[in-house]
Image 1 (tube, each protein chain N blue to C red):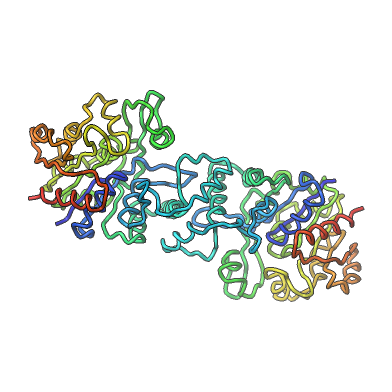
Image 2 (cartoon, chains in turn orange, cyan):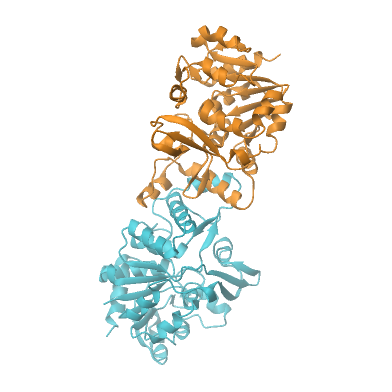
Length: 308
Length: 308
């Protein structure tokens, strides 16, 4: 049984770390958002790809969910002394990833090639693919103007009011090699509990992706990132509100209804099961707050049990 | 009284740290070799510029002479895990310098601009200039073929037999802005105790440099990097031998005789004073082994005392 997963950053990585306790990681292909990739001092930083790889490799910083466990910040400190912004916190071991990737990209490797090498070096046997090898950059339209994603997300801590998104470059971006095949050949596709606007949204914006999800024979199961009217992490709740949508798991289900067969929401939202079932989905209410690897594994098991 | 200095790496930096104890650093312009600059994972590394700036800024690693004091090597360790060579040891704080420089160069700044910024950020008030803003790369012709400088110098630890040098790019390189003026307007030009082939040689190969040294009204004083038939550091002695020259301070004096007025050699080589005087130079024999900042300052004072 092969599984494909669409993933953003921390929430997705936690779920995937649970999933690989339940299945052979070699049967898993993770398609990762690259819309929040950006250039930092001329280096290409891919926060979601790295979070997924670091987490599956067991070297992620457990307190933040991103970055490398026990990392030092000596290069960043020196860059501050040199007058550089340091609102994006890159540790020394993490910096090596970006130096390595940028150099390989400049030498002609694809982002997929580099992701494969980074995963292998971290002992990750799941396939971790960028959604596309072509650069896609999420721009956020806000009441303070149109902002680069990390400017909105990290520097301004998601405080501006959001009116929409542009995934720059997505119209010219093709899915990375293996992405459409993974969706096509999977028994199940899992949409991880990630922000639907800025984590899953850019993946769906890559031409051919949404169609592949609609047409695959695989069961597509999405996990709600909204629990009891709140995002566990990040601005998904605020974005739903800014979009005039109800802040609930049901809104997430409606955003995915054209391609989703199954939906997992939190046990705290059990009252919404009927509403989501009416969208034509098979629904389960379970614990989705992944406080421990055990909960993540149980959540993964619940998803697997929904498959025929 | 303005002083210009031609400098390589560690030996030059030690001398300059002594010199700025004796003169106002703002009266000093250091023209630094960039022939051993190279690309490391796509980053531009300038070992001599950085050694001079780190040393004058008081942050150099005192045990190696290069790199940053107390630096960590976590990025390098991670790069090793990613399968990269790590024979060139770049620490985390040092890495910040290369990330910063490479990004600014890519954004259109000149190497001089970047050197100025790096010096300022390290509290260095002397002017530290690259010999040229154009890339010059020293290639070493050896019995193992023609090697990039750092390949010869660091990876192979200077073991191949050297038959010559090419300073690639030097024929198209102009002296950096301020370099010829500094030599022209100085009261004294000091040729630091650096390797004449691979540290001072590339500087002299920049078109206009040698002529500027010949025609300046300044006293030009060179300090021998050879003491008692040996180089204190690096392969200068082996290179003299490979070139069929006597391994002595007198050979150094002969290499510089067309532009040098004064020559400082070590007290251990006092027997050579007469021989060098016969080249038409004013000669002093003093302690040149800079075991401490005090010795470096005394050496600087000896140089200053030779000026009219």
